[in-house]
Amino acid sequence: MAFLWISLLVFLGSGSGCHHRICHCSDRVFICQENKVTEIPSDIPRNAVELRFVLTKLQVIPRGAFSGFGDLEKIEISQNDALEVIEADVFSNLPKLHEIRIEKANNLVLIDPEAFWNLPSLQYLLISNTGIKHLPAVYKIQSLQKVLLDIQDNINIRTIERNSFAGLSSESVILWLNKNGIQEIQNQAFNGTQLDELNLSDNINLEDLPNDIFQGANGPVILDISRTRIHSLPSDGLKNLKKLKARSAYNFKTLPNLEKFAKLVEANLTYPSHCCAFANWRRQAFELHPLCNKSFVRQDSDDLAMDWGHRRRSMEEEYVSSLDKGLDITETEFDYDLCNEVVDVACSPKPDAFNPCEDIMGYNFLRVLIWFISILSIMGNIVVLVILIASQYKLTVPRFLMCNLAFADLCIGVYLLLIASVDIHTKSQYHNYAIDWQTGAGCDAAGFFAVFASELSVYTLTAITLERWHTITYAMQLDRKVRLRHAASIMLIGWIFAFSVALLPIFGVSSYMKDLQDANQQKSSQ
Ligand SMILES: *[C@@H]1O[C@H](CO)[C@@H](O)[C@H](O)[C@H]1NC(C)=O
Ligand SMILES: *[C@@H]1O[C@H](CO)[C@@H](O)[C@H](O)[C@H]1NC(C)=O
Ligand SMILES: *[C@@H]1O[C@H](CO)[C@@H](O)[C@H](O)[C@H]1NC(C)=O
Image 1: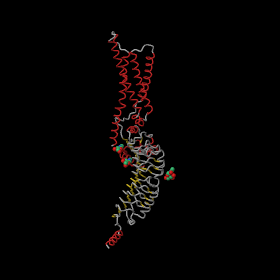
Image 2: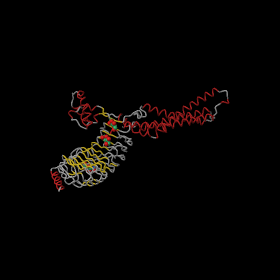
Image 3: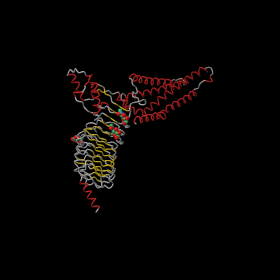
Image 4: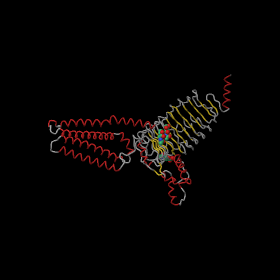
């Protein structure tokens, strides 16, 4: 009897719009947060504006589960361990739906390619922490709004195929694809989109962005490749880029030709030497703003007697903010004088004492001089060596010491030649080579040569001086004459000394410097 009464009450309750047997409902928000729920209740009020299924035991969201919910604005499906499949037509023909959240469903492996259909108001679609292997098919969504597609933490998504986002929206789209298992992005992946932002950060296995990846897309305006293994940017499709972020992208060592970054205003990168490139790169504002191109025609034809300077100050702020927001000011209010301003790229991390910006040789004068000196020194010392060794006279102690000195100076010449050729090789592109050079074997070799040769040279000079002093002081005492074997053992010590001193930086001190540098980088990235 009591059971009947309760059933009747429940029946009356659901009839009034917002009571339910198992789930909770208030103010047209319907919340199923209940272990017992294993299928979607059939009696959810059709006028609900929000549905939430949290911590349920749903396994399947069946075909048409939400059809007929004309007022529905939000759907949240989160923390459902048991969920495995979302069938076709689940999110279809819902004219007011603007937000879908599907998250924390590790066993969700399949979202039917026909699951999303005709959602003209959609603005936000989240799919995160699931087991799906492919991006959801979004081509039938056809939203009329700007859409943020937020697909994060799906470690089984490996590939982004071509045309993956076409049809998502007729407006612009923002794609957050962070922390998935993405390894490959195909050419034309973003075909047919107006791409405001593409965030690929934390796809730690992603190495390559193919050259035609942005073909058919308008954008991206903002690109983030932080913490990926991407080594270079595609050569096409960077012309709309305003903001580039690549923090801790250690493989990204080579910047593309800067001319490709026609609109870049902000770069947040990994290596300070890349900022050197931007620091030396000046663009006139007219290259950035489409209206500026027309200005020259106008200034020529119209005899503009306007006082540009007066209007400038207020317009300047407007212009800069228009660059930031991507808005265009209309032609009549635009201050054409601004087109002659110079625009800098705000770049970080800034170069510092450890990573200075200078080319190996900043001045052309030094450039010529170092070639001259190194070649002269190599040739001169070779001549000296040949003469000393090949002469028919007996090898005396002074001659032997001179041989050593010539050899040491020859090494200095070789060192200078090495530096000069690195300089030629990296001329004006030093920022792109600095990283490999500073961390590579070439730098160690050059350092070794420099230290070894200069130590040996100084040591030999000292030895020569002492020998001269000894010879003069004891000129009369033949028994105290310096013999060749004495000189040889003294020089042997000299060689060992110079060699060890030169090895020190390679093993000890240079790794110490690298530690310091790493610490520095970490500090600046925090
Ligand atoms: C790119 O998208 C357009 C429609 O936006 C389509 O017509 C074209 O076939 C697509 N290109 C490729 C290579 O798929
Ligand atoms: C990209 O996503 C990461 C992680 O969510 C975030 O920290 C970063 O700011 C985003 N990048 C941009 C350019 O917004
Ligand atoms: C670059 O990114 C770091 C950390 O994400 C931030 O602190 C810094 O302000 C950014 N720099 C610029 C110029 O945006």
